Length: 66
Image (spheres, rainbow, N blue to C red):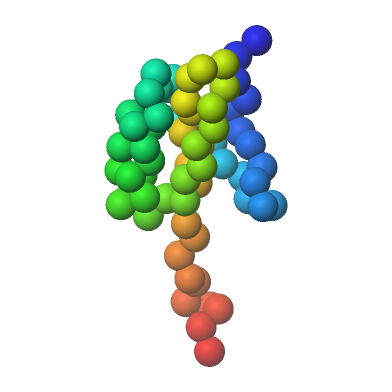
């Protein structure tokens, strides 16, 4: 059985990017790319591989502004 496609962390849902990274540095580089594109990122080590989970950071809605 493969990794979970989603994970809940701090009450937020993250989606796996579908790739396995052999080295933590590879995962961190990919995580930085997601972060620069306005994603929140979590990295998990599973069976010696690194997995990157990301979720888009919601933009503040115009209706929510005072």
